[in-house]
Image: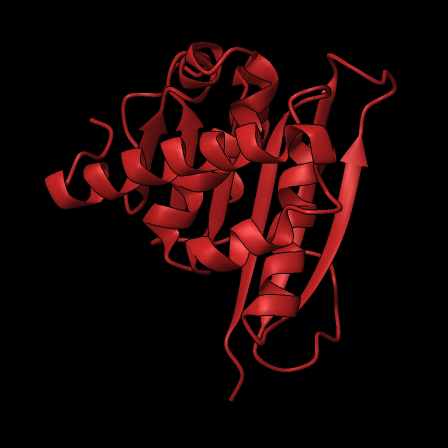
Length: 188
């Protein structure tokens, strides 16, 4: 029997949401011996409107590439959180941008994690690295794919001149995620 996982990355245009899904799919399919299919939804404007990208991951061929009830949701904006959190499967994982998403009081049955990805990216010199910080955090808390596989997937999906800083941003989020796991630091 195959194991299949559905992931939704979401936020607003310009946050690198689609790139998160591309990197994850590449890492899983090329460096983790899995099958992955990615689809995306972009709003009417290039930047600033809602967007999401979905990745279906399986250890066997994927017959239907669209998600129905994701087990993991990463929401980097309030609109994305409001739009998608209710479709998470029971026992699912919710990862939100700590400084941009105000959580509802309760999320019964969900594992909820917060990461100050934008703040960390700004400390690294540019908020454009928010997606890589969040992706590092995602990698640490979900354990779906190794950090090494994710870093191997970066060339070709991030500009060559920014590869080192993107790896540094990824590692910042990854270390923060490992610390959050070890401390059991989920959202209230």
